[in-house]
Image 1 (tube, rainbow, N blue to C red):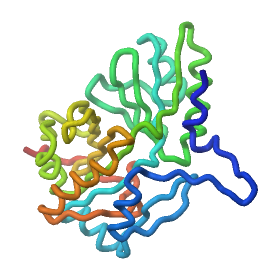
Image 2: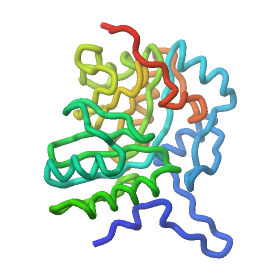
Image 3: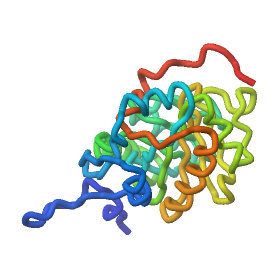
Image 4: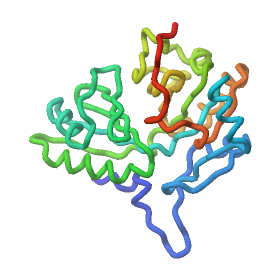
Length: 251
């Protein structure tokens, strides 16, 4: 059984029609004043009219950003074969469960001894999927590589109030002692199954079911709005590999 239909890059142009992928939160972003651009096959909310103000909000108060376009690829194999596949695709060795690894421009997230999720920029999804498939072909046992980009929507919460925003709808402990830099926390997010990754000191990526996009946007906007946070476009986010690293522990 093939899951190729889930891959955005597998869509082909028919005449004048160019297939475009859309986030499940696009309507909410548009209502909030988003300006969209076509990037790597996705209609991406790049800003909300004032990129400088959005960057300031990320640095001084708080903001949320729709990043559903991020590529997501699930790997499954026996533990030794899973580790070999990840290493063969450039993911290196993970630092243990509960921690993601940043390598080769992607996040390598161990979920169980036999399952991992890889998250990357949409422009890199096709190439990364090919590398993973090639690495899996060399496995001694069974190994699967399935793109799940359109199964999981995603939001990034950024800024000094990011933890407080989460605390208003999520019971996960995102303090330094429980969720260090690159910490990975599966659990209940707004009473739905989710996954939270601490990408930088005040920056958290949350993944949840695609069909729950409108609901999650509403929850985050309600929690963040009361704390002075605002939606920010994708262009306001600092590149992850250039994001400042954590310099001190926070309570």
